[in-house]
Structure formats: structure tokens, C-alpha cells
Length: 112
Length: 109
Image (cartoon, rainbow over all chains, first blue to last red):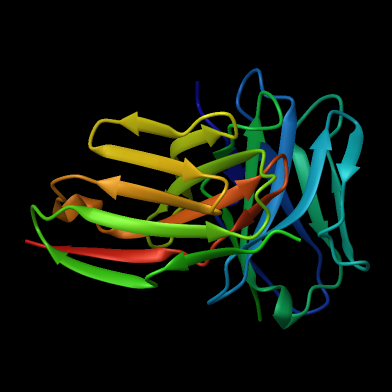
């Protein structure tokens, strides 16, 4: 079992570009979560998804951010028109139920 | 809204000493409490999960207790080793975890 796989590990984008972050959950896990860790801050919940459904997106910024978890393929966190304040580590986690998280190694986004 | 606080923010101990890390939360109606370890520039490794009906969990040198009535959890690490140096995070909630800011531990050889 390969664990939660996130790619890329590091991503550099210029201001105004789009960032796409991918997350493949652990085998058998149907619940996916995205968290953001800003520099010198704790992890903050962004969104909770199940296959083809967004269950809770209360932590997502209202604009430019979107997430999906299609029937086939990985979950995608998409950030349009990135700004310097989007620079952070983005972590994906998965679970077989609504507890017992396993986290991925994260994607570190740098906006230049 | 669940608020999670971890004290102390940093801790430095000599090798072999026992570690005591504290976590407090404001909403006692938590679903689960989970302790994680984070190494610099890395992801989170789950250490222990305590469900709300449980009082403690143990794994090797690690023991975590949960007291919902007082809104506290404590992580004990016995006989610390330099490899235990990391940031330890506690998180409370159901599917939506609220994280503390962490305790950064340094174990001196």
C-alpha cells in the first residue's frame, strides 16, 4: 500500500498562473481532505470530498480555489491566478471513514 | 468553533528523559483526537488516534490520554531519543480536524 501520494512535491508558479495539485488516496479510502499550512501557521482545513461529491468546502477561499475528486483518477486542488499569499504547503489526507487520517507528504507551492 | 492549544511551543531535553506534551481543546464534544509528528519539510505521520469513547491509546514508547471533561490530552514519550526530535501536533474533530500550532521537540544526545 503506497500511502497517500501527492504530486508534485514542489511547484513554482508565477503570479497569475494556475496551480494544479494532485492527490491519490490510499487504496480503500474514499474520503479525501485538503489542508493548507501557511508559513509560521498551523494546518487549516480547506475541503472534504468523496467520490464526485464535495461534502464540506467551508475552509476554501471563495475565489480562485476549487477542488474535485472524480470517479476515476486523483483528487485535484486547483488554484487559478495565483498570488504570493498562496505560497504554502498543501497537504492531502485520506481516510476509510470520517476518522483515522493518513496524510501525504504535501505539495510546497511557491509563487514568484 | 474548536480551538486547540499546545503547550509548550518548544521543548529541549537530554536523551533518555521522558517527554510530556500537552494539548487543550475548547469543545469537549469532540469526535476524535489524533496526535501527529511532522519532520521539517515533510508530511504528517499519524502517531495515535483516540476516539471520543476512549481514555487512552498506547503504541510502543508513546502513550496518549484523553480527558474530555477538562478538555485536555497529553502525549507521553518514554525514554526519549534524538530521533524523536520533531514537531508534534494534536488535532481534534470529526472529519474536519482543528490543529494546534505544535510543540517542537529537540532531544539532545
